[in-house]
Length: 209
Ligand code: 5GP
Image (cartoon, rainbow, N blue to C red):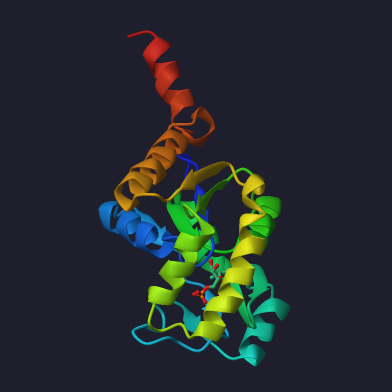
């Protein structure tokens, strides 16, 4: 166990289309010490998605095996597919005192909160309006109108859980939202309880010199 710092699990949730993926990518690009949790999913890959980078794409049988062997930290059904967070990389990150980012829905956030309450920091990203969200979903050429309707219904459900999160921001402007997300991360990293090295540092500071 790393005795220098307590790693945090930085959970970002939002309805699809609220900009979470872009914010997450930028956050990771700007901070190489962060690693992304790559989920397993039974959803087929979209154009441009890479197995092992965006998701581990697996079938339902393999997914059920992971559940049965307790290999998932959390899992949930979102739309008609299953999604889950592999447990081993999370345990390794906590062991090493590293921070991880999670793009998971409210059901997953709730399970992580239940299992690792001392490590989770959760952020909910709201769209400026549901009309704006609808427009953003429609602009994504890859989503058909039927998919847009399903995602809007899910968005309403997702947003209703905003009050279970530690932090909430409105993504009016991507750059501003990114600054806010980074500020949350910086402040959380400075929490006394995460800085395990402080005890010996202060003891030395106050000790005979
Ligand atoms: P998409 O299919 O658009 O990539 O993701 C759909 C939803 O599933 C998003 O809200 C995303 O946050 C959520 N999701 C992705 N991976 C996981 C996971 O491992 N666990 C849970 N609970 N939700 C996930």
